[in-house]
Length: 330
Image (cartoon, rainbow, N blue to C red; front, top):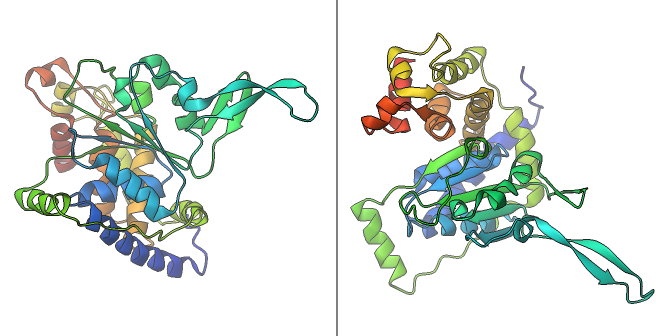
């Protein structure tokens, strides 16, 4: 059922126009990443976390920091390293003395996770114990220290980066943690023309200032607006079919899925598909979800939620290839 209010159509159109300006502003600093930028904005509009995967030097960190500037959000960055401790992320209890009474007591000192937008840079470089410190923040948007719960600021997003090549000194993210990320966004090498433009900008005095086009309250209001974007029953069933057909043992999976996939996406994957499609509709200033919105977010929503079979790995297949085949067959 639609929850659109009388003035929502005007707000949706205005949001689409402002998002066009925002993407143009990001393009003045980030060259050739239109696809990742759109997927990242969809995740943010849908209150989701995102994992950006790409080799070093593709402007992943610059993209996240520039997005924080454009959205007017409080931004923090953590460089993940093998010696990083959980308290370096969440915060810790410290003994402090009251200057007036002289009494000593333990007080909580918040860590860098207490921000609107947290960049977890090279998240796979830190051991599982430290990675696990993010789990509560990702899912519950809170931190527990010494038995006390501390709510994180609202809005709260984790945008993490990962290098897919270097394996020495890295720790693979567990499936449960990967599933907390709404999207896994692939950042590929630029085309020749885009790389040439990057060279022109980075080897000259070119600078591009970011103007805050939104505020924290604007972002919170957009989260509510995304939930009211309309999606038809047929498109909701389509999104469910895409996810359910990734499950080899479901009885609905095509033959190639049963051959290539050992595990498929769960209900959270379907929710991410639908919310991502709603966010994309809002991004383009539309009140209704179109089939193209669902198809546009299938790869980032599913690629980290499907597990390849031994046969598929032996054939050097990638999850994206299976998802592309699934789209063609559904």
